[in-house]
Length: 283
Ligand SMILES: [Zn+2]
Image 1: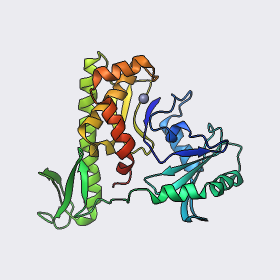
Image 2: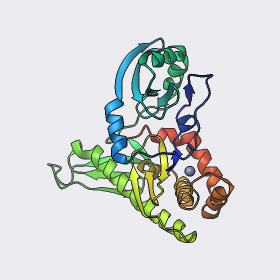
Image 3: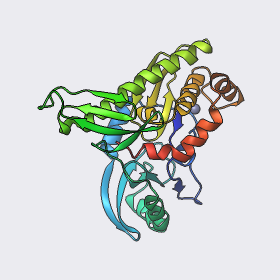
């Protein structure tokens, strides 16, 4: 699988403070040699993820422990959406090694967490971006006081949500995911057609570490959060993943095809580097 990585605030590995690629590098990890099926991946996460609040020198900190069989070193990364730090341990490393890395980088962790943009919930009165333009969420009790049926629609720069207020956040999320699926299905079809390629299927996901990915069988997936980004960013990410239908690496021929499929490569990359992490804190 080739995946377009979201950016977080960087990462450290135990040996020599080198930034590691999966999240420290804003773009891409090398295609993984071996890919667990989604079900396997979920099981690995469910069995090994453990979250707790620890009193670090910089203050109480949400720490998520993650054991990863393919990890080669103990590493730290900031989780911009969860607002905490993730410690990844290779199969044989103990928790003590993770604590040691946390303590020696406590200042770094505290600084990065303090610099995260504040979280924005889907709520009445909140403004959220759609295609890069802020839309204010407005709840209407119109029609259905019980909220059994509600709908969501855009008028100008307002996102109206009817039905029970307790369902508002879920409805906004469902609406944005449906919009994202529609948008990326259309973009991928157009761009694949231009290149004489075909996407097997297009899905949207809520991945924290990837903006998009292309599986070897031709299935493309995109983060639904990109519907909040400007259209030129969506265009670039779609072109990037469609180009992987032909080239699974990031060699010169891959980038040449990306440039054939979008005029927005540089601008799109710049926007995701600078602004992308904010999208992870919304909703
Ligand atoms: Zn890629």
